[in-house]
Image (cartoon, rainbow, N blue to C red; front, side, top):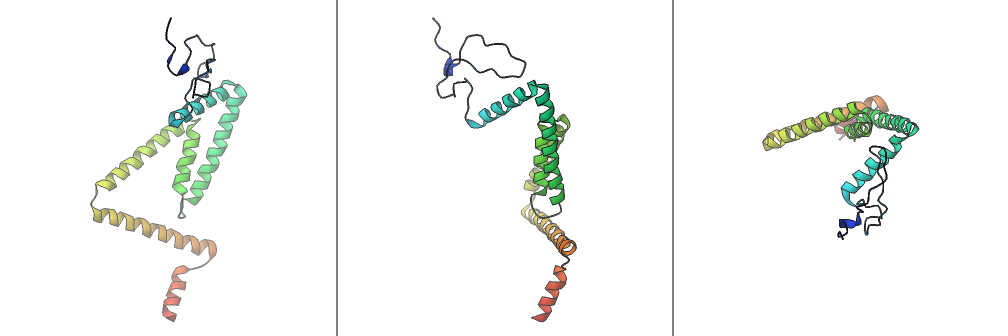
Length: 173
């Protein structure tokens, strides 16, 4: 007689399913939620997400609904991110998040996200190789840019010229 399979996964043949659709093992597995699939850790989340998407994609209506939902949600997140880019805050992070949402369903978004990641890593690695003085100057330039965007945003959205107000305040004291 054969010893039991590790982690309680059955050696019995499983029912046939459509390609990419997960079929739970009928054999109870201790500590594995009874499915024979690990449910903890990062790998477990990825597997569950992939399997859940496969179930939705197996149905033609679900496939269309998923594509439409991903397109709308990703578009909304990207649009909000683009609006926030000139302002101090998470503008670029939201654009990249929206791109990641689109990458769930659209291959072009997956390629663009991979390209963006590569460029950000290259930039980060380049900055780390620079001397402390160069990194300080890059940070100073970034702060100057953020400050100028903030001043321009306040001036045109709130109609307040902060530089003029600061100058008047300094002249008064």
